[in-house]
Each structure stands twice: as structure tokens, then as C-alpha cells.
Amino acid sequence: MRTARAISLLLLLQARRSMTGAELAAELEVSERTVQRDVLALAEAGVPVYADRGRAGGYRLLDGYRTRLTGLDRAEAEVLLLAGLPGPLGDMGLADPALAARLKVAGELGGAPAAGARRFHLDAPGWFRDAPVPPLLAEVARAVWGGRLLRVRYRRRPGADPGAEPPVERVLQPYGLVLKAGTWYLVARPDEDGPGEGPEDGPAGGPAVAGRVYRVDRLTAAEPLADRPFERDEAFDLAAFWDAKAAEFARSLLRERVTVRLSPHGVERLPHLLEPVAVREALAGAGEPDGHGWVTVRLPVESLDVGYEELLRLGPEAEVLDPPALRRRLAGAAARAAALYGPPQR
Image 1 (cartoon, rainbow, N blue to C red):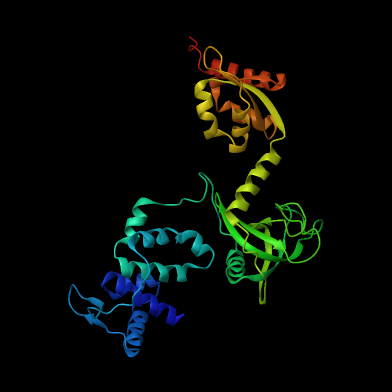
Image 2 (image 1 turned 135 degrees about the horizontal axis):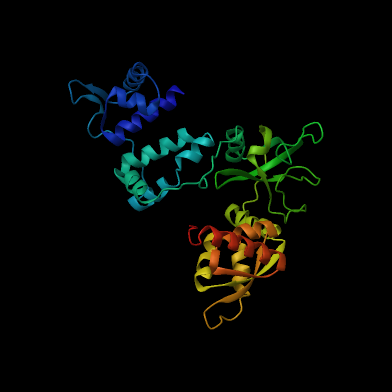
């Protein structure tokens, strides 16, 4: 830890030219006394670091001294820095190497970090929800990063009674981690013959199966097997697998169909309110617009209850034609809204 911290201190001074002991202590999350000891250790190792006294003083490197980072131009460095998402990297236990890499790029290219940060920001969690970090995420990330098998124990269903439904144990080949709307998922292949069912598993099968998906927050144990590397299939494309899996999962939920007339504005609003898979299917089969521009679609929904909630958000821009029970339910909601907004009673 001391060596890693001293390297971070060196890179900070290279990137920022001069920093006070208090600034370095805050950045490295240590005491100023520890900073003094680390500076002394660097000096003893031959690094030309010295302290300036006075109001504008601080720790500095001798002019002209730097560790060189070659092979990257400014645009490449800015793109590289965008990949260092501090929140998710910290959750996975990779904050220290990420900081070192960013400092190296910053020291070589000056304003690259600020230029990138001013232009792009990833806000991974969804609106109006907390996204607690799964306690075993760092262990899972260590196995993914190191290419080692991972022994896990997990719950198929959240909140299940351990006595009635004991956790499942598996040894997995961890291929990657995905952060979706604040929830972490592990993409992996079982390392053993058998069904290998999981919380959001794909179909069982042989080598053609790309992988299965496990919610990291459902893991109750995770142990990277340091002495057991696995041979990774280099043809596996994590992003493509996730896109296909997400679309497959969404389609599996859409069990009902509702016939709806949509106004032109309703068609515009539809992609902002409903699942993209449902929107694509509905608009692909839309009929010709009538004289007022309204179109009739067959809209996939998870259930009639969910469809009711979703279509309420479209208000007068949508008219349900079928099934009759859903039409009556929405008509009742419209009547209650009209009564609320009718003329005030005297």
C-alpha cells in the first residue's frame, strides 16, 4: 500500500506541479505526517522532490523531471480518461489502478482530464432510486479481471426462505460485469456439466451458449479461485451478448396485446414512456394514419394492469379499442379526472 501511495503522490505532483501537504493528504486520504514520510521515501529512492517554504509553498518535483507516457495523442488520452468511471470502478475495487492511470495521462497531456469531464458524464443509476453497492462486487470483479474461476452461492429469488429454498452453489467462468440502471449483473458460464440455472439464466446448452446472467446482489458468497484460471472464449462479445439478452428478457415479459389508437403526439411520446422492444413491435405493425393522423397499433404489454398504468401516461393521446375490460377501466379513470377538473361547485 505504501508503494502504491508513493507512486500516486509522485504522479499527482507531476500532474499539478505543486501541492501542499494538506492537499496531498486530502487527495490520498492519509495524514499530513504520512505525506511527509512518503515524500522522504521518494527522495531516498532518487526522485527529485523538494518542499518550498512560504505562503505559496508546497511539494514540487525538480523542473524537467517526469515519467513519460508515450504512444497516446491528446484525443486518445481524452477518450481513455472517459473510460475511467470513478463510481463503478471504485465499487469493483479498481479505484487505485484507475487513479494511477488517469494521473499518468494527466501528467503527460495537461488538461485532458478536465476537457473530457466537462463534456461527458455517466449517471448510471436510474432516476428516483437508490443503488446500493452489492457487498460481494469487489470479489466478483477480482475474478473477472484476473480470469479465474469463481465459486458462488446465490438465491434464485430475492427474499426466499433459506430453509424452504436453500441457496444454489456453482463454479462459474466469469466473463464480465454489466451495470444497468444502478444494478450490477455478472455474465458467466457454468464451469461444470449440468443445468446451471440462475436468477436470470439463459437456456442450457453446449459451447454455442454465450452465457448466463446473475444479479450480483443475489450472491450470498463469492470466492475467486486463485489457482484455477479458465480459458476464455475470445470470440465472446460482452456488449452484443447483453443487448441480445436484454431484448430477449423484455420480449419474454410482454405477454399481452392491446389494440390502441394513437394521435401523432402519442406516437412521438410512445418511445419515451414504454419499453423499446414493445414500441418497435407496435410501430412496425401500425396501420395507415386516418384523416386526423391517428394510427392503430397492437401494443405488447406485460399485463393488462401494467398496460393500464402505461396508457394512463399518454392521457388523451391514446384510445384503447381492445380488450373491452381495459377500455372500460380507462374510461372510468377519464371520467374521474373530468369530475376533478370540472366547473367548481357553488
